[in-house]
Image 1 (tube, rainbow over the protein chains, first blue to last red):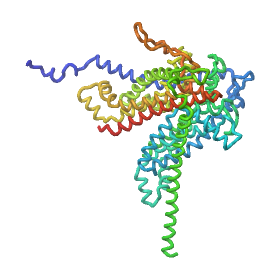
Image 2: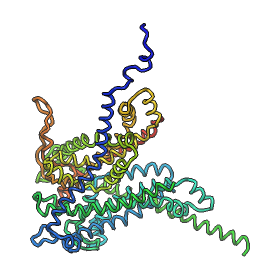
Image 3: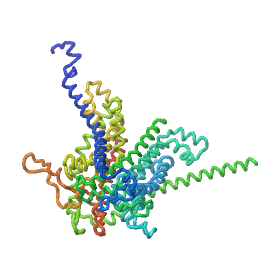
Image 4: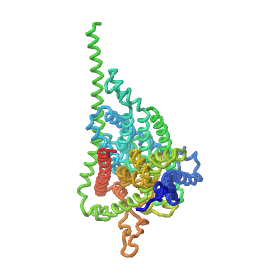
Length: 310
Length: 308
């Protein structure tokens, strides 16, 4: 056995300063940073792409016409470029969906968080998650071939395509998003608040409505806003079941195209790259992005506030 | 008023308030039932309409003008290849970004921008990704209306899901594991690659599966890039007999995928095609349910098994 010098023992070579190892660590960190930064690049790419093509579009069409014209017929000879009919279709179908999803989603969330026995919750939560995982085209099929005929039995004058049936199915589809986020928010409310309420003689229902819900208010609001942006951006259900005719209407019993359905309709045809028809889908997409973005920003502000409560 | 009267009054109030509890219990179960019922009816409808069409031939035939002999061969092959591209693109990027944000990122403005950005990306409608892919991949980069463009579009779509689940899985690992590794002289990357990623693997896998289940069912972005709906041929084979044995020609091939095939059949007026749509839908639903079920099982199993 040969004796080692103290320096060798205290600092074996592989633990000593190594230029190559440090370089490798730096390189890996830079690489990981790039992957993380890619998400920012994606956002920038989305914005640049939409704005660039929309800019070309607005060279041909004035923004005033775009916002105030009541007809959207970009592919006709007599072309009109008013986004209002598409926006009205989007808003009406989303409103119908939210009228279904928000009450039902909230009730399910309160029930699961405050009332349901453990086993019901353990079964219901994964089930709702599965419901949210069903492809949207399948919901579209369901809306067109099951819900519409069913509704036609109740309202005989309902046409084969309608915002109503698309909206109803979309609402059911969005329930899991609303209920699971709201439930998370309500379960985050500390137990002591419920115990305080029960100690004052409140019933479960009173505690849920007057103590837990106000405390979870901003989390629930954030869940609603996620639901809204899902409804506004939903494509396949409306493309299949609501028809593709732009129609300036506030009546859910009529067929109408949404912004997303219009984009699908144009994409199904074969429009040459760079034509005005090609640019319209980017202008429509930009409108859609701005709508969902504003909802998301509100949601983000609310979530931030909710985090600071406890 | 005597004290017994008061007592009666109080009891009456209690009974009245307790009744609301019951009413709400009923309402809650009713709302849950609506969701369960819808799902049951949807599934039953698919099975009743689609089951008779499901046969071996349905999986091995190309789409056709005759509904009776049409099948989903090109659709499921296309879906598999698109998913392959999506996995190859989204998994390394998502895990890398998740690891960076959780382990490396300093607390500064850039990090905060990235974090806000990831949350916002998750809220962007899927069709917008389609427009990005149309402008960027199809025309700007010249990939054309190909499997590559579609796979990349879906990869961007599921990236936030992979990032968020990777972060959650890594965050759940106790600091002591990292301290132990550093105490033994491991570098940061050695700690990450030999300890954190393997321990978080099950959680990351859950995220990848959920993301892929979403990508498989996505129709809108793929329609937007202009995928043809009538494809009666298969992309070139992945393997070839000569060196280097792997061929990448399939990346630029035109294609169709399951949801597009279903959309194509749904939008036809003939009822026979709609039965085909039901059959394709059934395959699609079973596939996504199986994937989501696997993810839920994995997560549940993990929660029970792991004790730090």
